[in-house]
Image 1: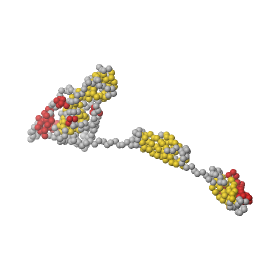
Image 2: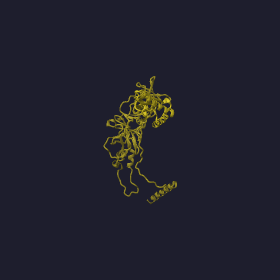
Image 3: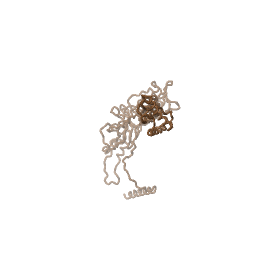
Image 4: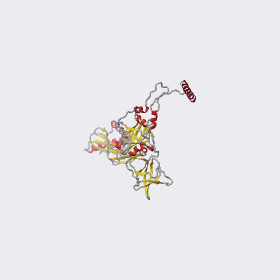
Length: 515
C-alpha cells in the first residue's frame, strides 16, 4: 500500500512539473459553472430543406408507374442533381407540373439498433427517402423531360416519381428552460424506430421516425422530449455490461455491494433533448431534433410535451395611407393672375407615391409635386385646389388648398377738394383763396395724371349772374395756370347756379369728370 501511494504521488508531481513548464500560470478568472454536459445549441427552426428532404414511413401504397430512367448524360452519368435534366417513364406526366422523387429504402447495414427494430418498422409501413423536387417541361418520344428544382441527394434511375403534395409549415417556438430530470407526465409516449440514412445515433438537426402517428393524434408542430430510463439502459447490450462491473473503490474500507443492473431501474430517467414533428402519416411521424444534451439513440423513447400554446408573433402593422401637406403662394390674387401650389407627399410604409391635382374653378397645370393655378376669366371668390397622393396599393390621402380671387378695386371717382368763397358780386381771388389754390397746385404736381374741375357759382337767373359765375371759375383757372404753372389742359371750368363760391373738384386718372 505504501509503495502504491508513493507511485501515485510521484506521477502527480511529474504531471504538475510538466504543466508548469509548458505554460506560465495565468491569473485565476471567475468561474461560472453551467451544467450543460455535451449541450448543442438549438437549431433556428425547420427549413424547407428539412421539411421536404425528411423522408417518411407509410403503409399507404405509393404507385411506381412513373419512375426515373436516365438523364442528360445517360448512359455516362447515372446520378443527377440540381439543374440537371432527368428523363421519366410513365403515363401521367403533365407539362408544367411539379413532382417529387422518392426512393423505397432497405437497410444495407443489416443491423438492428434495438431488438425487434425491423419488425417494428414493417408494422408501420415502408420507409421512403425524399430525393428531389422536379418540374416537367415537355415530352419527347416515350419519356417526359424534367428539370431538377431541388435535390436532397443524387437521383438514381429507378427512383419513383409522385405528384408533389405541399407539406405543412410548423410553428417553431423559441427555446425555453429544459428540465433534464422532468418526471413522467402521463402524456403520449412513443419510440424512435429509425433515423435518417439508417443512423443509429443522432443529434441536433437530424431527422428521425417515430412509431406513433395520426392514429395516435400526433400533429405537425407537436414537441416531444427524448427520454431514456434506467430500465432501458439495463436492456441495452453495451450499457448493461457496465452495470455488471464492480463500483467499489480500492481504498474504500467498507464498499457497498449491490446489483448495479437492478439499481438502474430506480435511477431518475434522463431527458436527453427535444424534437419537433415535421409531418405525420397513418402510423408514423417524422421529427427533427431541435437540440440535445448528449447523443440520442434509435430506440430511445419520446414523450409528448404538455407545453402552453405558442403565442404567435404579433400581426404586422396595418398598412398606412400616404401623408400630404400643401401650400399656395400667393394665397390671394387678382383675376387673371396665377398661384403656385406646392405639395409634399410621403408613404409611412415607404411605398411609391404619385400626385394628382384638381380645382373647382380656373385651370390647373400639374408638374410633379407642383401645380400652377390660372385664374383667367375667374370671378372673385375662393378657389379650392385638391391634391391627392396615391400609393401603389391604391391607398390615398387628399388635401384642399384655398386661393382667393379678390374683387377688382372700385373705379376712381371725382371728389370735392376745396371751396373758395367770394364777396358778393366779386370774382376776385383773394389771398385766402390763393392759399387754398397753392396747396392744390402742389398736389397736382405730385399727381401729374389728375385733373381738376372748377365750378363757379352765382345767381345764374340773370345774364349778369352767368357772367359772374363764369368769371369766378376762369379767375381761379388763371391763377393756377398763370401764377402756379399748372397745365391748362388739366383745368376745366364750369358755371352753375349757387351762392358766392367756387367748388374745386379733384378728378383722378380714369374718373368721370363731374358735370
